[in-house]
Image (spheres, rainbow, N blue to C red):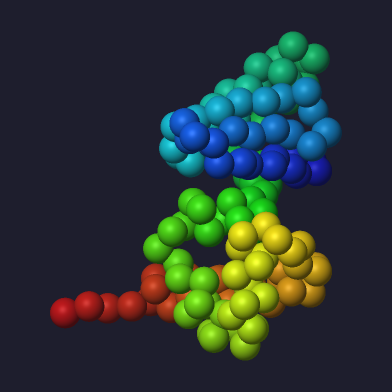
Length: 126
């Protein structure tokens, strides 16, 4: 099955999400609640059209850079720019929504974020 792409946006009350190619929309106060509501909404739609059950593995959640940094406020854009070898001012413009990064730039940022995530999961603190 082809993955269902969902676009997530930060709102004043939490998050909203919509499917790119399905008439499915939902909200949630947290990302955890949003994910549960996404699956429920898609499966209600699937039931209505006679489709199969959708699991979390069938869903691809997408945040744009400003939304990502809004949600993960703990990640410092300045430190990340140094880590990935990107001009701090340029990343700040991406984060602020003043400029839209190219696919290549997004990939560079995503690689840095994923490397950081791997390092954090492997970390031992005593």
